[in-house]
Image (cartoon, rainbow, N blue to C red; front, side, top):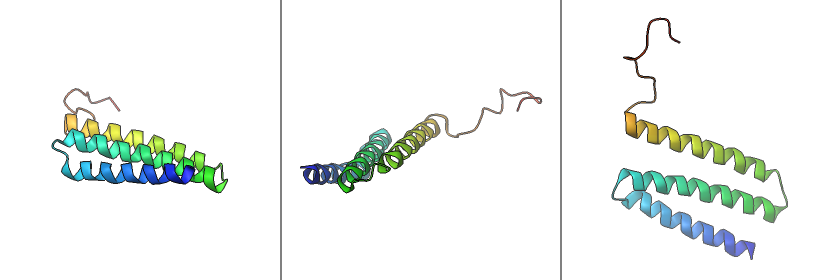
Length: 95
């Protein structure tokens, strides 16, 4: 049963990769990449359950956090054009 789940996750990841390459807007592509990351977390968790190695859940959680931070960074870059602070609003003494 879990092998069927892994196959289904792989099929959805392939369909999401098609959306990444064929997406009409950049936000569709970002959403598809975020979903690929989410499916990867699910894949790692199921693989750890099948192999009897619960430490794979720790790897999946770390990957989920990296996926979230990366998605936020990409969306911030798309909205503001950079990832840094606004230089015009800062004074000399600010860090």
